[in-house]
Length: 390
Ligand SMILES: Cc1cc2nc3c(=O)[nH]c(=O)nc-3n(C[C@H](O)[C@H](O)[C@H](O)COP(=O)(O)OP(=O)(O)OC[C@H]3O[C@@H](n4cnc5c(N)ncnc54)[C@H](O)[C@@H]3O)c2cc1C
Image 1 (cartoon, rainbow, N blue to C red):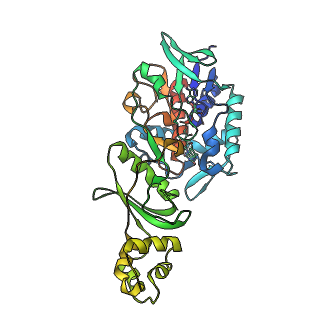
Image 2: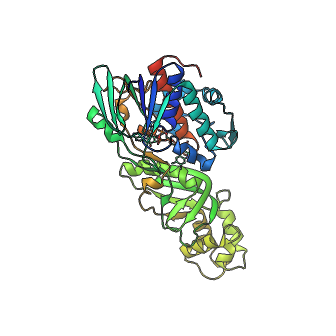
């Protein structure tokens, strides 16, 4: 089976690469190990597919210097790329979605665009080995050997339903950095008895005395974890530190829009007991957790200062990282020093390109990872096929 370009992985970046390459008239095969392509796109954004963000910039990623030129080259092309597949986009709070808010529509539109462009998609075909030949590659799969001039390695990560195939590139001299769950809940048992309760709060992470993350948003408390959008946002920073062997601590400010003095003054006038007084700010399960942490008994007015301090600075200890199978994204992947940041081509093996999450690139929660998938696919396709108008 001979093709010009063999794309390994039918995820976001693999299918986008295939569309762009096939539209240039190239013979492209996409080999996908699972029974269907674009499974993560279908699951993304709680079924709404948060496919990009108006705030996309290099600093939203773990390796800004590597992603910068790729993001710049794709700048202004997202809307036309999706329009060319028949999709309109819209934004909500900076997050970009398909206008229909329906990830299934994105999957159908992209698969249709790949098919119309002439790309061949083979699902249930797992790549087992990649052999470099004089003029290209022999890709050994569960469905025989595919021959191609170029390989786009778009195998993503093993987050949730994915498969980790980075070892396929080891014989070609590529190394990868350690992978950890990135966008996920953070294991934590510091807030007990409030499972299922949500609160709008500020979360700060510390590396020693240094603040490494401080943002406001929604937290969802679980018995053994801190979850919700805010925890997901923090988890990227947290995991990147853990990967370097740095264990950070955290603190919640349950009333970020009030000073400790204002809160203390409120408690000083209260005739209620501590838990009841804390219910002025918190769900009662959280109020009980804060009162317990403050070690208070009796009236709030007799404990005003310690209640205010605890409410403003509820310290947290974390318990490792969550299992990759429970994460949306991983941090870690193919070492970036082995890839050209403008073309995604391997500096070790000519004709080998890598895109998306296979590389050691992870973005924050909010559409940045799918944006990286589209942008890196565009960079690789352009390097292979020449200028692409999208
Ligand atoms: C539940 C969930 C929700 C998410 N929500 C969002 C969101 O709202 N916004 C956002 O930006 N990001 C989100 N993400 C992250 C985003 O989906 C990924 O970063 C993105 O899909 C990565 O694309 P990719 O093409 O690099 O890899 P993947 O999507 O992981 O695709 C890789 C493909 O390669 C295949 N493969 C692997 N090995 C082989 C092999 N040996 N042979 C053949 N095929 C192989 C895999 O089966 C897979 O289909 C979410 C992820 C999950 C899991």
